[in-house]
Length: 258
Picture 1 (cartoon, rainbow, N blue to C red):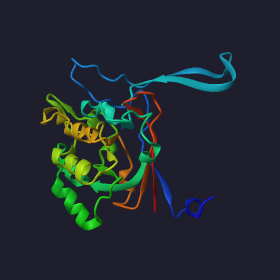
Picture 2: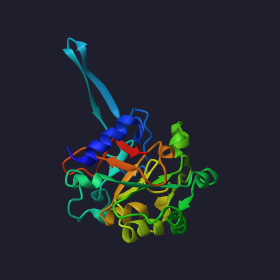
Picture 3: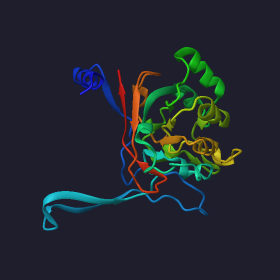
Picture 4: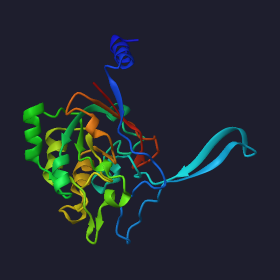
């Protein structure tokens, strides 16, 4: 075993490194992104018992389940959006696994989101962050901390009004900056999707999806515990299920942090 891996295991065992779960629980009550009725919406997570040490299977317990690829804490692959449909290796089964691992840059806009649920992260905010913490490296996961995952009531979490959801996210210019000028792996958010709640009204609609996936970048949605990560110094591992031709997948996202 290499010295690097031995040191990693020793640091974890000694408690000098922590493993933080960035994943929300997946249940039939998991909030779903509401789309207008003319489009297919994702099915809710459904789970049923196959056997539990009984006449259906005397020595084992297991379940069946079904859900959409973009339910709960999930991964968005480039093929998820029309802008990424013709890119190479654009489905979850074809993405090189080394691209699931990268350093985390955590942008804290929780105070802004508390004041304004429609707050959009601007390039100016990103440049201010870089002045304090250094340039966002290529191959990083940029994680948007809003503390939105602390909204445990699904109604508050989706924050649906007559004109659609109201949740924070990225300004179009910020998505372009991260994808094109910083070459990040992708972005992660605590909200139900990687675009702001009102992004259907933006130009183009859902610009973070359009720009990120059109650039071959990824998305992580419905994250949690971002308040447990430092601005820099953590490593994120976000490996989706290897669904052949899949546009995304529920997944368990973990961070290793000092």
